[in-house]
Image (cartoon, rainbow over all chains, first blue to last red; front, side, top):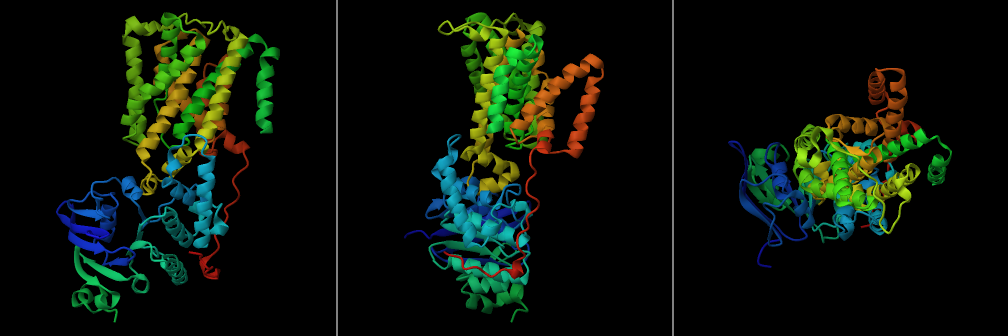
Length: 251
Length: 322
């Protein structure tokens, strides 16, 4: 209990002279759904990329369940139980939707290094895949190559892939990016169902304030690489700094 | 399945009915088919376009030749050891080459193959220099087995090696490691984000491809009776790449037909015209432009027409079952 579930301490990331993240500190409790909001260029995606080892941090450290994540390569971060989706849909486009989810499940299975005789591993991970396709409502397109799915279905497929890994911490990078109003409503509905159990900790980057306020337990506000606000949705809405920087015309 | 059995039947009977020179041609076709098959693991399944696969071929051929000439190893032992040695050399080579992708990977593999070409050319005392190693014997044994030393026997040995290699590669690409290679081919960063150590998987593919490429080279030397530096040359790397692409990469079967197509075209066209390479080049261009999935892709049933995911608004939300 000594250390927080996920902790960023003074995390910085520079691109040349630009501080994309400027001594960002935040803690996320277990089971919490935490949204990270901020205008374009606030450093939200950089934060995700530093958390998942895609970009090395220029300073500071990240710990997850007391273990350092900083300095680990992306695949090691994932094997620690941290799964993510990408802001710009990243799928195995030539492979069927089911195989996409199956590969996600296989990555966390002990049989992933079998070079031969993987029948049992395949069957087991295929069952997991079908389960998650059903949960996000994509079972009817299981055999369609991922690249041919509609944009909305692709976004959901990414979520299904991340969840099929059985992560402890889930990073969702704008899951409703580029979706129509109806698709957004459907995605939020599905996410709400999936996250209701409370065993999963979620970090959510999102532009759509309605989505943020309907899903998040707490919100962290980033602006020009700095944390300028942190609290419950109601508290964050009231923060003057937040209103000035981001929510200006919202209420 | 029925197809495969029929093919095995034909291959088994062929040497009994074919004229002698065609048995030789068929043996060479099968050796090159094995070579192309091995490259498909890299090109088709991992998305790594090697332009130096001749390195494996030459290493297999020279290792087998040295074992047969100087150590007096029985042929099957020499061939097996040569393939294993090639895989071993492929570990450090692959470790370096898989640091890169795309054109850099192609150039690095090319550089390694050319380096080995230079070694084979210059290291006179071991490799025989520009003359290569001649008079590579088909040593009998072990246990007094001799059936593979004859022309027909050697045909069967190569056929068995090809069939076994194909069966292994088929199982490999369907395995967890093999399916991961396809994921890396499609989106490496995503595969990494899912927890796959992409570089280790690519190295595994490189070593596997080198093993079978080495096996093909090891079978070639006692077939031809010699090993020469040209086996390492970039033209060989280019030719096997053409076989894979013309045949249809990512199918295992396609590249084998590509090898047969290439060799038979060379044999028959070169009898008619000196410009046979021109014809081959034109065919290659036509395939790349009009049938990018390769000749085998033409034959194979096309994937079902674009299935559409249902438009979102019409869908009921479906009760997700958490």
